[in-house]
Image 1 (tube, rainbow, N blue to C red):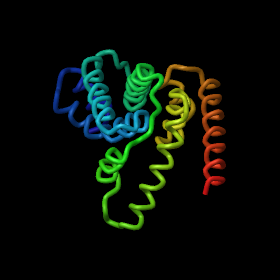
Image 2 (image 1 turned 180 degrees about the horizontal axis):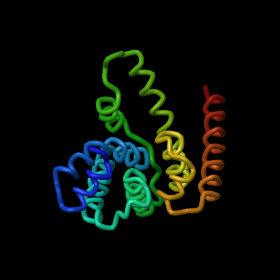
Image 3 (image 1 turned 45 degrees about the vertical axis):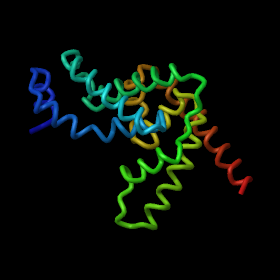
Image 4 (image 1 turned 180 degrees about the vertical axis):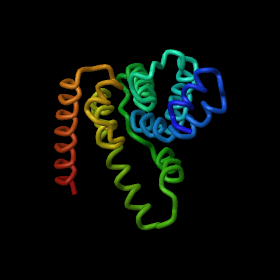
Length: 185
């Protein structure tokens, strides 16, 4: 069954159809929420809040964009609202959080690869956590989620030029951080 039919069934109150959408998009939503908070429990709470909001507001989904873009918009709004409430809190993952993420994101099929992925994720967490939330979200949506500039603009409700600006500044800041971390080693 195509996604449009599943969405329509869910809009008509079919909980099983919404369950299909949840299964399809839960990892996407959690990934963005996690990288915006770098707190496993907060990401779980944010993701749950996103899906509750999606279920309650599914009737407002007109289909002008894809369902995933609409869900990214809800995720972006919830994540930025959450970041705004924690304005002076620096986003840095603790060891306990990283251990949970290790289990959740990197299965142990190849232990060496898993270690390399975790090191990369720790560095990424440190750098992304230093970006202001709007830039962090733009970088996450473009570089990690693979959205186009237009999709990011639609998901964040800002002009494409603003997306480009946020990405350029975010990338520049990340490059400076990476260059600075190489100096420390």
